Image 1 (cartoon, rainbow, N blue to C red):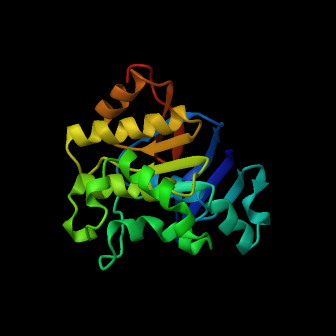
Image 2 (cartoon, helix red, strand yellow):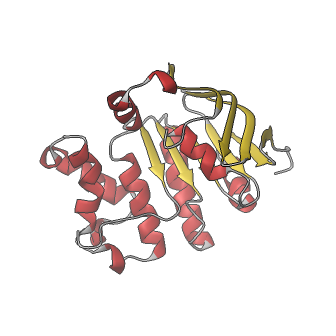
Amino acid sequence: MIELQDVAYSYGNGTLLGDVSLQLAPGSFHFLTGPSGAGKSTLLKLCYMELLPSAGQLSIFGRDVTEMNRDEVARTRRRIGVVHQDCQFLDHLPLTDNLALPLDVSGRDASTEAQNLTELMAWVGLSARADALPPQLSGGERQRAALARAVIMDPEIVLADEPTGNVDWEMSLRLLQLLIELNRMGKTILVATHDLNLIRAAKAQVSARVLRIAQGTLTLAGADL
Protein backbone atom coordinates (compact mmCIF):
# COMPACT_ATOMS: atom_id res chain seq x y z
CA MET A 1 0.00 0.00 0.00
CA ILE A 2 2.93 2.29 0.78
CA GLU A 3 6.36 1.45 -0.57
CA LEU A 4 9.61 3.36 -0.16
CA GLN A 5 12.59 2.32 -2.23
CA ASP A 6 15.95 3.87 -1.30
CA VAL A 7 14.17 7.05 -0.23
CA ALA A 8 16.19 9.97 1.08
CA TYR A 9 15.02 13.27 2.50
CA SER A 10 17.29 16.28 2.77
CA TYR A 11 16.72 19.75 4.12
CA GLY A 12 19.07 22.69 3.73
CA ASN A 13 22.58 21.30 3.89
CA GLY A 14 21.68 18.18 5.85
CA THR A 15 20.21 14.75 5.17
CA LEU A 16 17.67 13.49 7.68
CA LEU A 17 16.81 10.20 5.97
CA GLY A 18 18.99 8.21 3.61
CA ASP A 19 18.28 5.10 1.52
CA VAL A 20 15.16 4.13 3.47
CA SER A 21 13.23 1.14 2.10
CA LEU A 22 9.92 0.03 3.58
CA GLN A 23 6.75 -1.78 2.55
CA LEU A 24 3.46 -1.42 4.39
CA ALA A 25 1.33 -4.37 3.32
CA PRO A 26 -2.48 -4.38 3.55
CA GLY A 27 -3.62 -5.19 7.09
CA SER A 28 -0.15 -4.96 8.63
CA PHE A 29 0.72 -3.29 11.95
CA HIS A 30 4.03 -1.44 12.35
CA PHE A 31 5.66 0.51 15.14
CA LEU A 32 8.32 3.11 14.38
CA THR A 33 10.80 3.89 17.17
CA GLY A 34 13.95 5.94 17.49
CA PRO A 35 15.41 8.91 19.34
CA SER A 36 13.94 12.39 19.12
CA GLY A 37 14.96 14.12 15.92
CA ALA A 38 15.81 10.86 14.14
CA GLY A 39 13.15 11.41 11.48
CA LYS A 40 10.06 9.51 12.67
CA SER A 41 7.69 12.38 11.95
CA THR A 42 9.44 13.06 8.65
CA LEU A 43 8.92 9.47 7.55
CA LEU A 44 5.23 9.70 8.40
CA LYS A 45 4.94 12.97 6.46
CA LEU A 46 6.44 11.23 3.45
CA CYS A 47 3.86 8.46 3.81
CA TYR A 48 0.97 10.93 3.56
CA MET A 49 2.68 13.16 1.01
CA GLU A 50 3.11 16.27 3.12
CA LEU A 51 6.76 15.91 2.09
CA LEU A 52 8.24 14.46 -1.08
CA PRO A 53 11.49 12.47 -1.14
CA SER A 54 14.72 14.12 -2.22
CA ALA A 55 15.78 10.86 -3.84
CA GLY A 56 14.46 7.34 -4.35
CA GLN A 57 10.92 6.23 -5.15
CA LEU A 58 7.79 6.57 -3.03
CA SER A 59 4.70 4.71 -4.21
CA ILE A 60 1.29 4.88 -2.55
CA PHE A 61 -1.46 2.49 -3.61
CA GLY A 62 0.71 1.51 -6.56
CA ARG A 63 1.28 5.05 -7.85
CA ASP A 64 4.56 6.94 -7.88
CA VAL A 65 3.80 10.11 -5.92
CA THR A 66 5.86 12.24 -8.33
CA GLU A 67 3.41 11.33 -11.09
CA MET A 68 0.33 12.50 -9.19
CA ASN A 69 -1.23 15.89 -9.82
CA ARG A 70 -2.75 17.97 -7.01
CA ASP A 71 -6.23 16.45 -7.33
CA GLU A 72 -4.82 12.92 -7.31
CA VAL A 73 -2.80 13.68 -4.20
CA ALA A 74 -5.93 15.02 -2.48
CA ARG A 75 -7.95 11.93 -3.41
CA THR A 76 -5.17 9.62 -2.23
CA ARG A 77 -4.88 11.41 1.10
CA ARG A 78 -8.53 10.61 1.80
CA ARG A 79 -7.51 6.96 1.92
CA ILE A 80 -4.98 7.72 4.68
CA GLY A 81 -5.96 8.77 8.20
CA VAL A 82 -3.42 10.73 10.24
CA VAL A 83 -3.34 11.15 14.02
CA HIS A 84 -1.04 14.02 14.92
CA GLN A 85 0.71 14.29 18.28
CA ASP A 86 -0.44 17.89 18.66
CA CYS A 87 -4.00 17.51 17.43
CA GLN A 88 -5.47 20.79 16.22
CA PHE A 89 -9.18 21.56 16.45
CA LEU A 90 -11.30 24.64 15.80
CA ASP A 91 -11.95 25.83 19.34
CA HIS A 92 -15.22 27.62 18.50
CA LEU A 93 -16.87 24.48 17.10
CA PRO A 94 -18.34 21.62 19.17
CA LEU A 95 -16.65 18.27 18.97
CA THR A 96 -19.15 16.75 16.52
CA ASP A 97 -18.57 19.57 14.04
CA ASN A 98 -14.81 19.23 14.38
CA LEU A 99 -14.99 15.52 13.63
CA ALA A 100 -17.21 16.14 10.61
CA LEU A 101 -14.79 18.63 9.02
CA PRO A 102 -13.10 16.02 6.76
CA LEU A 103 -16.54 15.15 5.37
CA ASP A 104 -17.21 18.81 4.58
CA VAL A 105 -13.81 19.29 2.94
CA SER A 106 -14.33 16.23 0.73
CA GLY A 107 -17.75 17.44 -0.38
CA ARG A 108 -19.69 14.69 1.36
CA ASP A 109 -22.99 15.55 3.02
CA ALA A 110 -22.37 15.36 6.75
CA SER A 111 -26.11 14.95 7.43
CA THR A 112 -26.14 11.64 5.57
CA GLU A 113 -23.17 10.53 7.70
CA ALA A 114 -24.86 11.41 10.99
CA GLN A 115 -25.37 7.79 12.04
CA ASN A 116 -21.77 6.89 11.25
CA LEU A 117 -20.58 9.91 13.24
CA THR A 118 -22.72 8.91 16.21
CA GLU A 119 -21.37 5.36 16.10
CA LEU A 120 -17.81 6.63 15.75
CA MET A 121 -18.12 8.87 18.81
CA ALA A 122 -19.51 5.95 20.79
CA TRP A 123 -16.61 3.77 19.61
CA VAL A 124 -14.02 6.20 21.02
CA GLY A 125 -16.10 6.78 24.16
CA LEU A 126 -16.98 10.42 23.52
CA SER A 127 -20.76 10.32 23.08
CA ALA A 128 -21.27 12.36 26.24
CA ARG A 129 -18.85 15.04 24.97
CA ALA A 130 -20.52 15.60 21.60
CA ASP A 131 -21.35 19.25 22.32
CA ALA A 132 -18.14 20.07 24.18
CA LEU A 133 -15.72 22.63 22.78
CA PRO A 134 -12.10 21.45 22.27
CA PRO A 135 -10.69 23.56 25.17
CA GLN A 136 -13.08 21.68 27.49
CA LEU A 137 -11.61 18.28 26.57
CA SER A 138 -8.97 16.46 28.57
CA GLY A 139 -5.75 15.30 26.93
CA GLY A 140 -7.06 11.77 26.58
CA GLU A 141 -10.35 12.97 25.13
CA ARG A 142 -8.49 15.11 22.59
CA GLN A 143 -6.39 12.15 21.47
CA ARG A 144 -9.43 9.92 21.10
CA ALA A 145 -11.12 12.71 19.15
CA ALA A 146 -8.06 13.00 16.94
CA LEU A 147 -8.26 9.28 16.20
CA ALA A 148 -11.98 9.54 15.43
CA ARG A 149 -11.37 12.41 13.03
CA ALA A 150 -8.57 10.46 11.35
CA VAL A 151 -10.83 7.50 10.58
CA ILE A 152 -14.12 9.24 9.79
CA MET A 153 -13.42 8.90 6.04
CA ASP A 154 -12.91 5.14 6.51
CA PRO A 155 -9.24 5.19 5.41
CA GLU A 156 -7.31 2.08 4.47
CA ILE A 157 -4.18 3.24 6.28
CA VAL A 158 -3.86 4.95 9.68
CA LEU A 159 -0.65 6.79 10.57
CA ALA A 160 -0.27 7.89 14.20
CA ASP A 161 2.52 10.19 15.38
CA GLU A 162 3.15 9.69 19.12
CA PRO A 163 -0.59 9.27 19.80
CA THR A 164 0.02 8.43 23.48
CA GLY A 165 2.77 10.96 24.14
CA ASN A 166 0.62 13.29 26.25
CA VAL A 167 -1.60 10.85 28.15
CA ASP A 168 -1.25 8.50 31.11
CA TRP A 169 -0.68 4.76 30.87
CA GLU A 170 -4.35 3.81 31.27
CA MET A 171 -5.34 6.10 28.41
CA SER A 172 -2.36 4.88 26.35
CA LEU A 173 -3.70 1.34 26.60
CA ARG A 174 -7.18 2.51 25.64
CA LEU A 175 -5.86 4.26 22.54
CA LEU A 176 -3.75 1.23 21.70
CA GLN A 177 -6.83 -0.99 21.90
CA LEU A 178 -8.64 1.25 19.42
CA LEU A 179 -5.72 0.99 17.01
CA ILE A 180 -5.65 -2.80 17.39
CA GLU A 181 -9.38 -2.94 16.68
CA LEU A 182 -8.82 -0.90 13.51
CA ASN A 183 -6.12 -3.33 12.46
CA ARG A 184 -8.44 -6.28 13.04
CA MET A 185 -10.91 -4.54 10.74
CA GLY A 186 -8.27 -4.72 8.01
CA LYS A 187 -6.66 -1.30 8.36
CA THR A 188 -2.91 -0.91 7.90
CA ILE A 189 -1.44 0.79 10.99
CA LEU A 190 1.87 2.63 11.45
CA VAL A 191 2.52 4.13 14.90
CA ALA A 192 5.53 6.30 15.75
CA THR A 193 6.28 6.07 19.47
CA HIS A 194 9.02 6.30 22.10
CA ASP A 195 7.09 4.02 24.46
CA LEU A 196 8.58 0.52 24.44
CA ASN A 197 6.08 -0.62 27.07
CA LEU A 198 3.28 0.26 24.68
CA ILE A 199 4.95 -1.80 21.96
CA ARG A 200 5.29 -4.78 24.30
CA ALA A 201 1.61 -4.48 25.26
CA ALA A 202 0.64 -4.47 21.60
CA LYS A 203 2.78 -7.44 20.67
CA ALA A 204 0.88 -9.53 23.22
CA GLN A 205 -2.27 -9.01 21.13
CA VAL A 206 -1.27 -8.41 17.53
CA SER A 207 1.51 -9.40 15.14
CA ALA A 208 3.37 -6.10 14.99
CA ARG A 209 6.60 -5.34 13.20
CA VAL A 210 8.90 -2.95 15.06
CA LEU A 211 11.11 -0.62 13.05
CA ARG A 212 13.84 1.64 14.39
CA ILE A 213 15.12 4.77 12.76
CA ALA A 214 18.48 6.21 13.79
CA GLN A 215 21.15 8.22 11.99
CA GLY A 216 19.00 8.32 8.88
CA THR A 217 18.72 4.54 8.60
CA LEU A 218 15.68 2.30 9.07
CA THR A 219 16.23 -1.17 10.57
CA LEU A 220 14.12 -3.97 12.02
CA ALA A 221 14.25 -3.78 15.83
CA GLY A 222 15.34 -6.76 17.89
CA ALA A 223 12.99 -9.49 19.07
CA ASP A 224 13.64 -8.55 22.71
CA LEU A 225 11.12 -5.69 22.59
